[in-house]
Length: 300
Image (cartoon, rainbow, N blue to C red):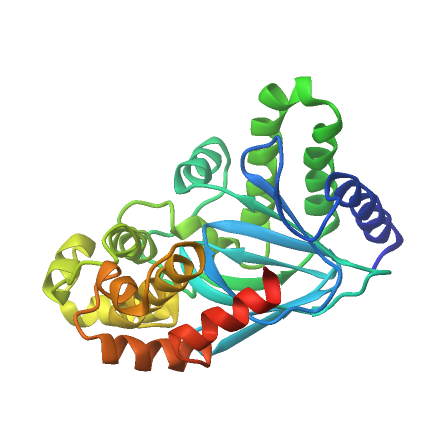
């Protein structure tokens, strides 16, 4: 790691520490920018990564997508080009050197705008690629991110300068080793963009049953092409993707509301409580009631 990269990371450590007084995820005055701080390694955290870039400046993390493991630290950054249900585990953190990271979310429209304003060319007919990847951090990207974070100390500048710096960050990522993966999601007619439409449909209607033929129509693909491209992008089938969303939402309901497992199961779209319990146990390691009791004992 170069001295310049190390200096920018040291600056970001100080900036993130100054804006995070306790462990957890923290929103900032820049709507798409979030900080994370953890003083201990963590058990699995389940959630959906929106299209975003994640940079760790101190510590390490493992993200699990289906059966794939993405391990990254200060030398890398992680990109999610579509909404993806994942498991995150902070694997390196301490009270003396807490895990410190930032996440910057963006939209396909923002990516498309950068492509239209630049000379970058994305081939519409290129085959879709996995919607998540880890890439080596570059000095130019880290410099730009540093400038964005520094705006938090100058709030009057955010409304004017943050969108400009955001465009530069997206431009730097598109220029990177895997920029094609991110660019494709914004190009209308590309297989990645079509799968993105299906992902968005399932996200909105996760508690409804669907016919695979209807999803294929949304993607403007044959059923076989939909299955193939969907699995390439998400590492899951549409049914598996929906199942992850349902189970994550059911867990959130059980943890935050006064309800039982049967009601939670019906609310997220399950018709069989026994099937819900089996699949819940498979994903989270314990039946619903035992899992929620464990979580409340640990975090509340």
